[in-house]
Image (cartoon, rainbow, N blue to C red; front, side, top):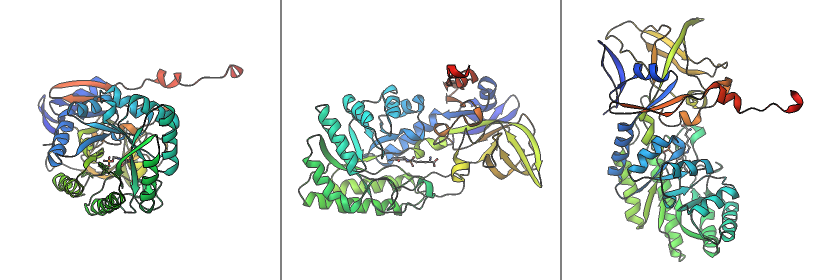
Length: 422
Ligand code: LLP
């Protein structure tokens, strides 16, 4: 069930997030505002947990790092996949125990490692020999041992956008599969390291199961080899990457994905871990924006809205397509116009949607960009000195601010003018 639907309010039909109308969100919090439906987050998590009942879920915080979002999953039992000292703090702040954290990423610093080891982070996914040595040194210095999974680069093309594919030879991620056996052996001999398994993550927004299958087959072969060499392998990380439908994609069904994870678990007799981000949060969020003005650009009609590429970078960065809907329901059979929806930032890349068929727009109209719960607000910047957008969460009829809009004073206060310029 879609948590965002048109419903009656004051005699007109407007888009709601669960029981809360989006015009009321705009009145209370202004625009642009990210609005998340808690019911959608919970429903997605439960569907995934049902599809993969034996897999441990580590929510990939990078997709949406708001404490209220992380907390929602923490209460449902999730651990978290973290990538930085900042995400570590957020996971703890949302109430996830350090043992339920997996510290991933190709460039953890020594400081980050030490901090994570002191706190008792449950697992480190190591992506290079240099990192293994640094982690060993950090663990020995702290009188502890780091539980490590080696991240494999299986040389599998995920068939996704070039900028979010991570498992091909030459991508900066993971360790070439041919080097895994030797490095696992070396890890086992290090005093500060306890190797517990292997991990893989070949990319994001995968719309086919085949690349997952290919990567997991590589993992299985590697585990067989490690075991034959006498090593213990207890845990396998299958990464994230399951795609969602933004436009007309037909990503694999979550049940098929879960069944695949279960096959790996049974074949290897290991604990299987998954790190979903996008699949859990993308459909649970909309970006609410207001039309500033409508203009003609040559032959094209263009609505300039108050959200921009700094608030939602995906269209500019990946040519991503997000559905754009009018908050007031379009009259059935009513007139439509082909319109570009652009932000106020001074770059031609700042177009949130091109050639969209929408009812004729006017200044003041509200629009909703759909499926922006993942990699939306987390990637926002203050480019053009635009304050970071507000974020709110709805549950039933309840509406809460979960990240107030940054104010201009806070933005200015980050800068200091040297005394010799005053
Ligand atoms: N695990 C690792 C090691 C990752 O690098 C990622 C995502 C995930 C899990 C979660 O993947 P997901 O389930 O969300 O596909 N900003 C881009 C996506 C970048 C993904 C980065 N890594 C976008 O907006 O499409």
